[in-house]
Length: 317
Image (tube, rainbow, N blue to C red; front, side, top):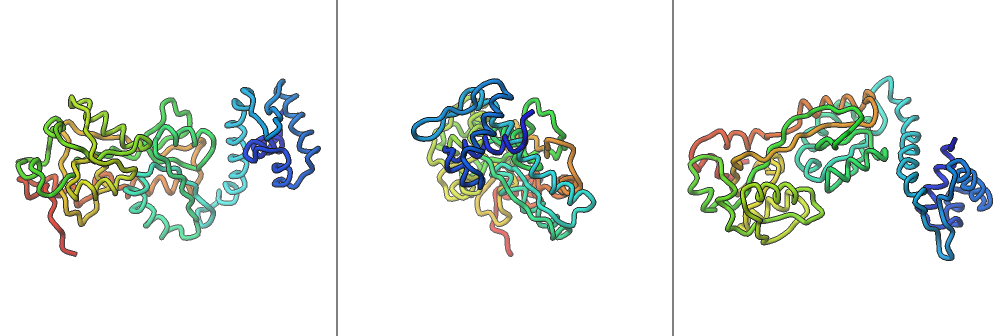
């Protein structure tokens, strides 16, 4: 059976791209490193790495084994931490995998009160552009808990948080906002506009493209950005409408926002590879209690009537 040491050697050789550099990093002799890799290759029944004149090449068998080796090492590294904090949540470190938009819109409100209750727990964030990439990272053991849409076929523990709603954001004097008698808008009414879009690498681009496609058009692009807060700023400045999670719109927002009809939503889940320990459980409870899926300052305007209620006005401090 493969040992953790052998898996660590394999991962380090691949990361360093060289047996020599890997041996230096691990503080072992190069013959000892090679011996352990050969023992691992005998265990799996074939070569995992190919030595080249300039570095190494990972074989198909090595590529298949590598993500599982990384996951095993990540789990082993957290085993001691889990044991130390199993009795309480007074100390330790919580590793969180999140989408960029959730990091901007949800986490500040949640982590503020949570850290007041658990000041000894450090937080390490792993931010991702797409929920698919985050799911793969969690499979490889990157973090204790991930926050976002649940990956298809996820076999670990999952804690449903709620439904996050997307809103159309635009300039305060946008004709669509001024003329509206309700806080709703059909995206087809904005088909002739140039949009504040997102970079192809951003998962938010998928939501915008899909919503527009369902409304029967492909959005023309005025500017692309990677982050929801930046898109909100560009839309408020008059570059065009955009589509963002409601919780990324700040309280003192000088633009306008409208609810798409039909609604655009995504389900948020906190999910883990294994049963959550006390630290993770306390964080998931905080998510359920404090996650701003529909912030109060947004909800109040959307519940009103007439354009003055959903067309944002500058709020007094």
